[in-house]
Amino acid sequence: MANGQLLTTAVEDEPRESTAAETVLELDGVAKRFGSEDVIGDLSLSVRDGEILTLLGPSGCGKTTTLRLIAGLERPNAGTVTLQDEPVAGDGRFVPPEERGVGVVFQDFALFPHLTAHENVAFGLKDWDEAEREERVDELLELVGLADHGADYPDELSGGQQQRIALARSLAPEPEMLLLDEPFSNLDVDLRVEMREEVRRIIKETGVTAISVTHDQEEALSISDRVAVMNDGDIEQIDTPQQVFQQPESRFVAGFLGHASFLSGEVRDDHVDTALGHVPREDVHGLAHQYDGSDVDLLVRPDDVTAFPTDESEADGRVVYRRYLGPTVLYRVELDGGETIACMHNHSDRIDLDERVGVRVTADHELAWFPADHREGVDAETDVTPAGAD
Ligand code: ATP
Image 1 (cartoon, protein in one colour):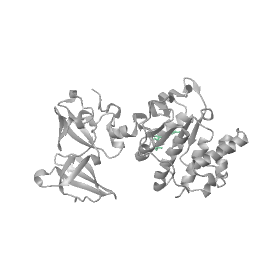
Image 2 (cartoon, protein in one colour; image 1 turned 90 degrees about the horizontal axis):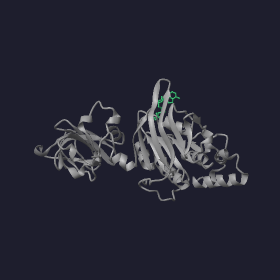
Image 3 (cartoon, protein in one colour; image 1 turned 120 degrees about the horizontal axis):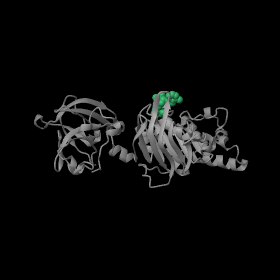
Image 4 (cartoon, protein in one colour; image 1 turned 180 degrees about the horizontal axis):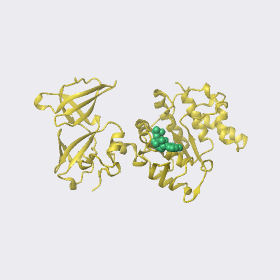
């Protein structure tokens, strides 16, 4: 392994759900402007003790600015930031970064090239008693699996090892909170997956509260206890990875977290009538009777539907796109009514381009849905599904 050690700690295959823990960070109505550009509008956010929260969103939506506001590297134009019940920004107060008890892991790791790994980790411990400092550095090097690399300089370490040292350096002064800005973007693809698990393990072992920033959905879903999906300077939804993926509250969130196709239909008594037949009402999340007779769009992800070659009499559409992805193949089927649905199949299934196919909804979970009258030209903020609400 590139990092010289095997993972010895069992890694959860699903991030656990945060329980009701104490709030350690609160942003209330925070706004940030650069010149005439409103980068953060009116952002409120609570972070719980010991959780890993990831800010996820497209480039330029304000993730890094939010992280910098928390760190004290930017001052808000409005709103307040409260850390451990202490106001640190807003209402005329501003506590500088070095007094906030927050550690930051930068995208490029920002290790000091002229210091060894050991000296890098010890950097923030200048005020510590020497024996305690040595003990703490050894403990951190052990935690990140680099006990044998303390004498190495950064350019003698692999990318993953440099990241471990950057993490150890930030954790050494026992911060209340750890902020990670695109922590995996400097690593090659294979290492990223390994380091996600390692970083989660290390953070969980120390118990520190962590806020990470990324535009990579898979990374956010795999390392976080909760994900805050950001769009245009605001949070669209904040919830567990499973909830934001399976029950997105807006079309933006649905589309940002993986492929999303929308299957239109009309709500009837016990089903939704769609181009693919009747979808039973109990298979649609929280579809209240007040929507009976309304047009809705069901969210179907590629693994929620299956296409199969069939006779013309049973066909629903035609394969218009096929992409081989190794283990899976992604198809797009244009339905006869004009809608396009994406389907993901095992690589061994082969359907030809232009082939006529039937399509079935085969999801084994409740589908999310959106009111059809919010289809186009709607401000994302108002485009919120009332799924689950009466
Ligand atoms: P990315 O994923 O590309 O890093 P992001 O979501 O982290 O994007 P930010 O870096 O927070 O986005 O930037 C949000 C917007 O604010 C961008 O339009 C950016 O150009 C602008 N911006 C950020 N910092 C400054 C600054 N110091 N001065 C002027 N504009 C800035």
